[in-house]
Length: 371
Image (cartoon, rainbow, N blue to C red; front, side, top):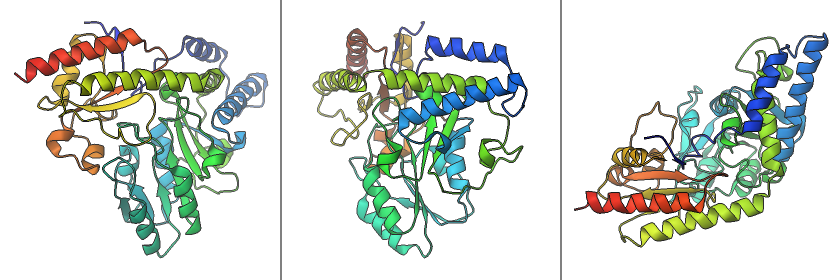
């Protein structure tokens, strides 16, 4: 059945029509931004316009924006560029953080049952470092939506002389994000989470912080990331950032939170066994991680798909594989419980009728499979 209701915005947001037009326009123009002739200068101007648009969205300086091929590369670059330092990450990070082999022992911060990091454990790990560490803590978890107190964490890390990176890929465009106010040294972004093209991202790097490029080439991005820039993708990213910044974020946040809370209220009324992971913590307004006791995640995803509703089981970055979430097990869920959870993520096109249909299908599936 054709997908009629899309509730998987944390995997990728539908690309905005204006962005498609912009990408096609720039592709037709061509030009290498490193060339000094007219076509090259025009491509360079496109690049810098997008850099400014993205900087405006996340409240940083344009020169602090480094363009990459996506969120994965941004996360990899943040860790590998400081591979000489001891590293501390949370146990609920995205695989693009957890799978990086920097050559140093990586220490893992415990996650509490509510999805937030254990601040005492982080303080202990920082105290145990003999050298100033690199710390990477995700701003908003991609599976549960739980928000971490990044500003407070940054202060703690800086007190120990460390550097802090945050993966803010799920935050930008959904809630107000200020690189300046967060006080972090690096921040990862991704275009396709805000209605931009896939395969385009950025790493925001605090001005004055030197970085060792891991991708060698012609010295692009001020020597911080080699390789000819994807001007069309970057232009699309910039426009998506501008459009996200122009929207009334406060009204959008309130509307998504209202729809999400209504959905959770209706589902939890069915059974006391239903769990909403991270419900007691500050969360993204669009994200809900819901367990259906006795029914596996894969079966749920398949049934919703047959009903024309797109959802996911945890992260969408595992080559289509459905497996028990490491995020939920880090929060104390058993393997069985983690394997019964789905992620529902709303977005700018989500309507109340979409949520009503989701609730209807959820109740029908739960009743039929629990008999």
